[in-house]
Amino acid sequence: MQSRIAPIRLLLLDVDGVLSDGRIVYDAHGTEIKTFDVKDGHGIKMLQKAGIEVGIISGRSSKVVNVRAKELGIEILYQGIADKDIPYAEIIQQRELRDEEIAYIGDDVVDLPILRRVGFAVATADAVDDIRPYVHYVTNRCGGRGAVREVCDLILKARGDWQAVMGGYFFSGNVGSAEN
Image (cartoon, rainbow, N blue to C red; front, side):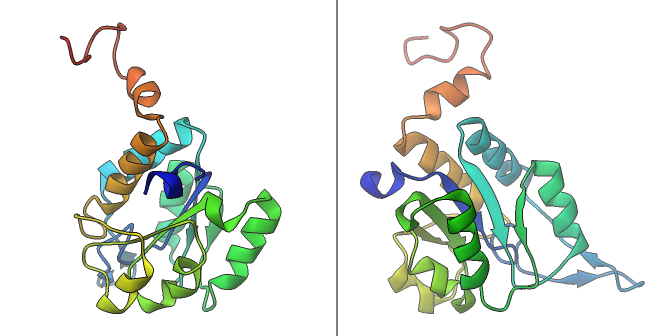
């Protein structure tokens, strides 16, 4: 797995079932409500701090996702996408990336075209069984419940970026070391 993660420069995410728990909730006025895990968001910020870009490709469109993406500084955002291969190809071309430099987290069969291409393919713990044979890693956590953070931490540790990112959370060089 280390060799698959080392070249990662971009993490792409599905939304429903990955960044959120997959439930679609409407209030009495028909406004869509989604919940996001703050730990997932912090994991995304940590990846960005390490120089790894994060993007979203979602089959559905939601104003809430626009807000969350902006809040997290995610510039790559595609919504309402029936064929996820189209924006994926655009991203590769625009960012001058290769498949092996991209990780993707999905949870359903609509994610298969990308999962089958990327260097590091991930399914959430509660993903449909049909995608599991095509991924390199299945999270322990469910979508919208820390799965994204789990993958962010995994990438940072496997690439050797963990200590540098974590160092920013301590006030002195010795705090938090294994010897203390």
